[in-house]
Length: 159
Image 1 (cartoon, rainbow, N blue to C red):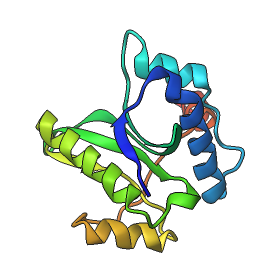
Image 2 (cartoon, one colour):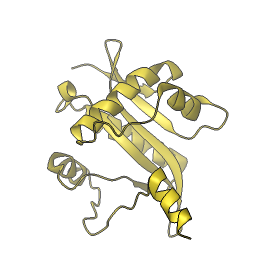
Image 3 (cartoon, helix red, strand yellow):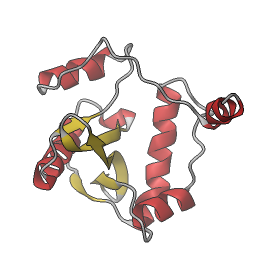
Image 4 (cartoon, helix red, strand yellow):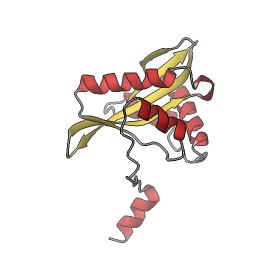
């Protein structure tokens, strides 16, 4: 299957949002997506660019994406965080996930980051196997902490 990997454009964000929603369904979080096309356009292409996104295009359609943003490790220094690497179901097993991850790793290397980090659900064994095969250190002894808006409000109310 032929596809190209390229930097995303503002006009891609509608298709990117469709991929984000597809991932949410896969992760059994169908109703969790709150971000809009306008949010993605403003955050990725506005005055303060908050993320960088690679897309995989096949015959004019976006069939995969990888979204990263800068971070900082107190132990290592500059890092990037891979928020999501999404391959639409029909393209899984085509090499597209590897091509997107390759772009992310090259991007991080070009930036001179000391680490690229991301999370994977503990039940997503195909993804864990994929990341292990690429030399990633999948840390099974760390729990991820994500207070949402309600959790933040509750925290502040109890200070």
